Image (cartoon, rainbow, N blue to C red; front, side, top):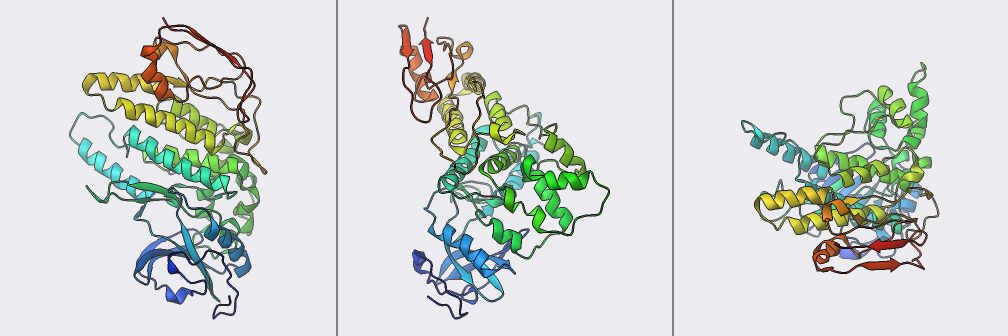
Length: 438
């Protein structure tokens, strides 16, 4: 179908929410300014009484925008991914019509951090500036991982994953400005559009943004400039990172988001990008996780931000580990008093990533999400007291979940020997296990 601009807009499935395929940007009035990114401006808008967000890209070639936007409109819905309802293509700008969300996670994070600081003032509560309790932080990370797993399964790379591109909806009850109902990944799959759109930030701001969120392998051009006495490059395209966007790069960016969720601080705050780049690329510098971060979560994040992209794990693996941690703690939180505190401390130390990391697998195109020889969680015998797993080769699941292991372990009174002669397609080599109870 041709729009009044004379440009064909033929998007299958665009009619969701009764939005027509020949909609123009002038049909979506700019109401409240939602935010200005490096390459776009977002507004609250309405169409036939329904609330949406409109994201405008100025100066981008229409064919480049449509090639990427068409894919987003057709994307299968997911509860942790912001829905793209439609698009508009006009003479001067291109726009996405998006699901409206209440806030950015970065804004909520700062509000929560300020609140906890106020509560801690004049008390002996220790450092209460961390924005979220650990259980809530795990839930946020888990939702982001689920959204990213869905995008990667659909063949969509984010390419610009950072805290400002994670949006939230608030709960209806309680303080709406501080509560979280759901978390969704936004601003994905527009790599070429952003690279060719008018930029709303200085070159220095864009470089610092890259250093904070991009994987080391995407910083090689900046490294050359940081080590050179020459003036800044005049090329915008070379810093867009469009040629180096990978699944493993998204995983690295996810780890940076997790650091900010845990601490409330942006990575490498108040540091010059030229000072940061050499240390980040070499692997010498990574954000410092807080003492409250459980060992298993610490190990997981260190894998995610590994210097070697082949050591990072896919989001299916990350989501699985976060589910184990979140479910285990949620089960224990039902307890009360000192017993609850002691059990949480044990839980935070009860799971380990125990399998060897080699041989690694590349996270590159093409990627099969179910073909990875990855480790699984195994109960720590020192904490669970009654169990021991002897590993030979690659670890495979002893239990379907850690929660099931914890709830059933007291019932086990006999020795079991598990011999694994075959393995699923997504597991590593076969292994022998011996599980004993005393």
